Image 1 (spheres, rainbow, N blue to C red):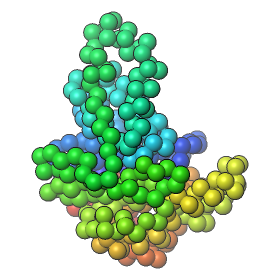
Image 2: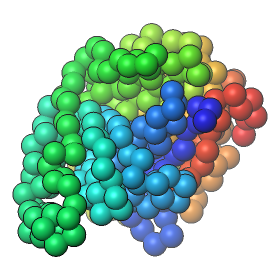
Image 3: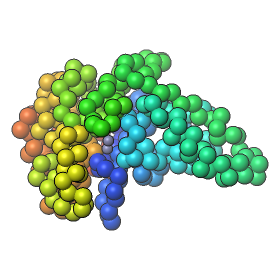
Length: 289
Ligand SMILES: [Zn+2]
Ligand SMILES: [Zn+2]
C-alpha cells in the first residue's frame, strides 16, 4: 500500500444541501495505516465509498470540536462496531474529545447494551481509547510521527493543524484557521499541504442565503483563510502540492473550479488540487489542475 490521501467531505461548515458536497473528513493511507482525519457528517459513507472496510478502522484524529469536524465521530465508530470491529481504535483530539465520545456512548447505551447481550459483540466502551493532545508531538510509532500546531480559529482556542511525517511522505492539514503565517514553518517541505480555503466573491452570496448575515460574515472573516492566502502559505512552506479543502462556499452554482484556481494562482505557481468529495490525491502525482 503506497501513501495516498482521499478527500471524503470537502465543504466547510455543517449545513448540507440537495446534491451538494459533505462536511469535512479525509482518509490518509500511510505507513500501512488508515487514518481518518476529522469526522464531519458523511464520513462513514465516504470511507465505505473509498473502499475501506470499517473493520480496519484503527486511528482517528480530530482537529477541533466544531460539528462539521466531529458530528459523526460516534456514529462512525459505532457503525464500524456493528460491521465487526474487533481491535482497539485510538481517537486523538483536543480537550473535550473524551467527553464528546462519552456523551455519544451514553446516548446509545440502550443499543450498545442490547447488542452485547443479543449479538455477543465485544463491549464498544473497551474498544476505544481517547487521547487528548495539545501542541507538539501527538503520536510516534513505526516511523510515523504526528505533530500538532495550535492555529488561529476564534472563538475556538483548541484547534490544531496536523503534520504526518513518514518515509512514504509528509502531509500537513491546516485545520480551520484564519491566515496564520506560522503554518508555513510547520508545513515546511511537506509533499502535500491540505489547506482550508474561502473565496471572497462567494462569501457575500453565502451570507445572504444563510440568513444570519452580519454575524456569520464576521465569523468567516475572523476565522478562515482566503484561497490567495492559502497559496501564500504553500509558497512560503515550499510544499510539493497545495490542496484547497473545507471550501467556503462549496455549493454555489456561480462559483466554479476555475474561480478557486484563479484565486490560488495569485500566490501559488505549484501543483494545485481543488478538493471534491471522493477525490484521491497520490503522493507522487505531479499532475496539476
Ligand atoms: Zn470547519
Ligand atoms: Zn471550525
